[in-house]
Amino acid sequence: MLPSKNVDLDPEEQAALREWRELVVEHYTEDIEHLEGMEESVHGFHIEHRLIDEKPTLRRIFHERPTRALELGFRIMREQFDAHKIPTRPVLRVVGLSDNYLNSVDELRMRDRNQLVALDVKINDVSQPYGWLKQAVYECLDCGATVSVKQRRARQRESPRTCRSCLQKAFEGIKTDNIPIGLFNPLPHFTLRQEDCVYEDAVDLSMSQITYNQDYNLINCSTHNQIIGTVSDDLIDQLVVKSYARVNAIVRVEPIPDRTFAKDTRRLLALDILSVEELPIRS
Ligand SMILES: [Zn+2]
Image 1 (cartoon, rainbow, N blue to C red):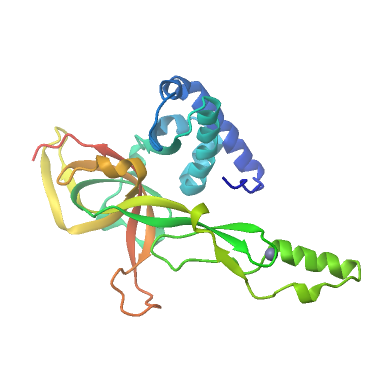
Image 2 (cartoon, rainbow, N blue to C red):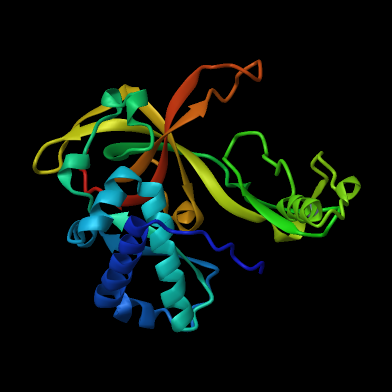
């Protein structure tokens, strides 16, 4: 493992981190204890949304920046798993989103990008699992320093622009009049360290909007209000084709998959699915 970079948190994020810790310790310590001795490499951990709603700062960040809120939650869950000597990687699965997040496929627009939504759907189809490079690790060929670069799914791989440690050395050289500027290569000079890269397993699924009555009798399954989404890790094996579910997700904007030229500006809405809750629909 590479040492994790010390990222400074602003005061609001520090407050959210404290609230995450309170939430997890107060409500989930027993569940975590039950996982001791588990051998799976990844475990989806259900977190009730109403508990997040009770924490003022966390509630706001989770609403405004759900991805960031989940990154902070992961740190706390990792810390708690470590405290119980559980090597498994936790994934936070927030369930039971309040009804104001309930949306429908036809209402989603570009402005909903990065927002949280809950959708009631039928799962039509699930792709073969594939892996994607989530975090690339590069090594500077001049000084040996390593740097991690987060990647985006289905986009071009991104590499670092400059080596900070080489740049630092060049600047220090300027101050001392001992200018090793010739040693500083302004062009990136990196190699990908395959063995340190972080990959994630994922599947894509296609879904159709459904409507149903209070007794969970299906009223309609739309043939044209369809959307695609992605699930990862532990959820991959839990999807059932032709089943009904409420998916809780973050809206993403994706390039058109079969675009014929690289700079095609057309975009599709898609879902990054956080959790899937089965619906007892009768059709
Ligand atoms: Zn370097």
